[in-house]
Amino acid sequence: MPPKPRNFDYGYLDLFNYFWSMKGKVIVSSFLTNLFSFGRASAVTVFPFIFVRNKVMSKDEHLINHERIHLVQALELLVLPFYLLYCVEFLIRFVYYRNVEDAYLNISFEREAYAQQSDLYYLRTRKIWNFRRYY
Image (tube, rainbow, N blue to C red; front, side):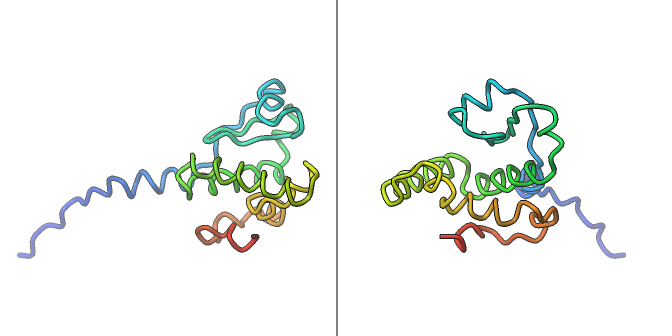
């Protein structure tokens, strides 16, 4: 008689898969959106939350997909390094472009998110660290 298969404990792998498939908690708050985006954005991701200005924007699939792409980017870089790299890249781009909006739009994380926000299946097929293609 063959031995019974053991119940395998996936441990960290289960936890990783849980976070990897997470969609973030969408919170409608004009105040927090303004606070975290310095009054410039319709939505902002502060892992693991997505803050949006109003209920109408919380239903915008492309906007939410854009922010979910940022959630995955943050998770890939273990959250804190994502925000550090985001700020460093923004500063470098700001020195280069001398314009806040141009600097923001040329951050690799934003370029990926804007390029793919309309593809609602993108996160299912996205390769790890794909933001590097947008440098």
